[in-house]
Length: 259
Image 1 (cartoon, rainbow, N blue to C red):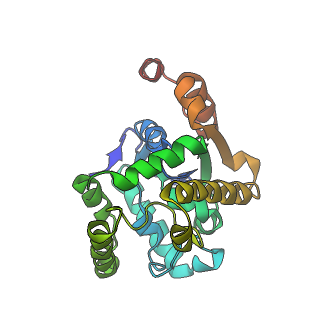
Image 2: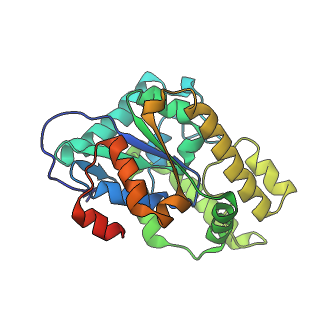
């Protein structure tokens, strides 16, 4: 059910690894490589935004303040991560949800021990990919994988929202989704003033600037920065740097896989 490598069986808790990134930045590739390493696991879904929004589902944007991380919210999210870890031999959880780029301090309030990987892709490529995603055909397998992560108490809310978004795609002039990815403050208003290309560029900019500003307030040893283009061009070198950060040994097999 879960993506994992079960070689890690010692009953110990290790801080989760949270990848911070904008939408359409190649982060899934990085997450999946790490998740295959001994002692790591992740969800089979592309992201777990439904879990992060539990207790705050009615918030209009993804720019969560630290105050929204109430004790009930912290308990639910931490417990969800711990269950995944225990189900996979107490493996270390690695997770990537693009929406977290707008709420890094909220995430940190829940996991003050977490390590962060900040992945940045060139904004021109990232926003162009986001535009394409708006016009892609419906991906039922993607929708179902995301739906498995919805907390049961939130299912009615998201069912209604799903039908609203589907109706928008069917009847809107552009035949596209209402909004995809992290929702920044003022994004829905920007759709009325700017083109889709411009809104996607603004979305990328807001996510990068907000994440950078928040991460800069944390201890440097908790953060590892990657440029997507560097990882693609020099995967072995960049993964060696990443491995040093996470305590992962570069094996010959992995080196061959990355080469």
